Image (tube, rainbow, N blue to C red; front, top):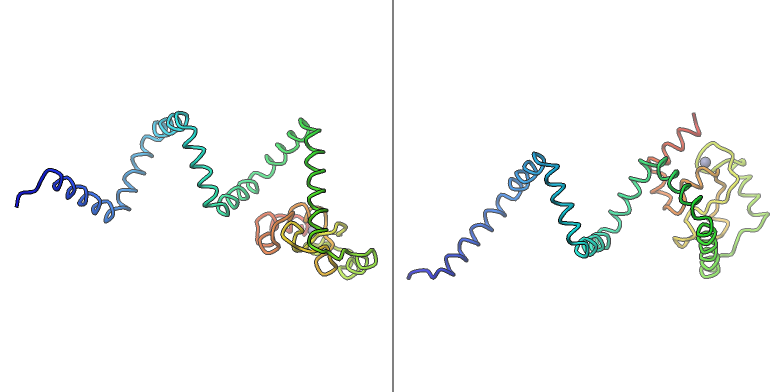
Length: 202
Ligand SMILES: [Zn+2]
């Protein structure tokens, strides 16, 4: 029986698809090589397309971030760590340019923290308990050899840690600032901590 034009087209499509699936890596490498050979052009084309389709770009970005939240956060963290000087400088500039917003943000952060402490039934740490803990660490930072004076919540409050004696350790300001709300194991295995430790020990 003779094929109709539609059947022929459908078969051709199926063949093409099968070829693409069977040669996905080869096709990918070929596309990549072509792109690299005309990188400026490809970038300009991408930028033009993005400029012409801001809604799609926004939707895609949002979708990507939602689907890859952890990956995106890790990438942002890695970038921030690799560019810590720049990040710090930008933050300083922004703070200097927005004095009202800074206090506003700080006030909101304090409120949020207090609400969390009240909400998670933290027993709190008495002055005596804190003194005993500092003494147990010989007045040093729990994470590096520096003198430790600030209160660090091992499990950060924002991650559900309690303000309780078994969740607080003394930390130097540098470690405390570097650790922030990161999970302990994540921070301890981070390049930021390695640098911190090298600096404190050296
Ligand atoms: Zn320290």
